[in-house]
Image 1 (cartoon, helix red, strand yellow):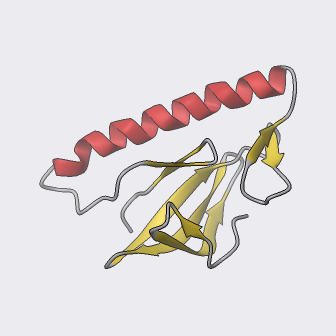
Image 2: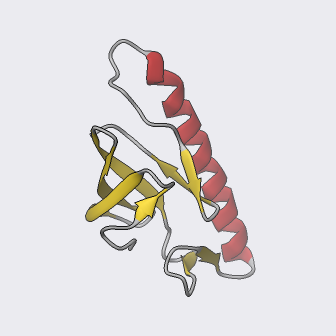
Length: 109
């Protein structure tokens, strides 16, 4: 997990993890005048964190290929969700970001 207090993209303060599953971890976070959730794609059976505790390191072979396929789908999902950012039924939404080549979605909380 990312440590509480970590700063993401120099603007989002990571809080505690509020959920996790087979494909990722969701964190409580704060931005400028925003309380939000940040979803991180981290499938534990396909990758692990590097020595720095933040970088995603894929396992070799077929697992690495599966990881990159999944990361591409995760990024596509984030981009689709961000298209609805101007919809009147949606609240303010920070942009999609990347950190250490890991896609993160910033859904409103």
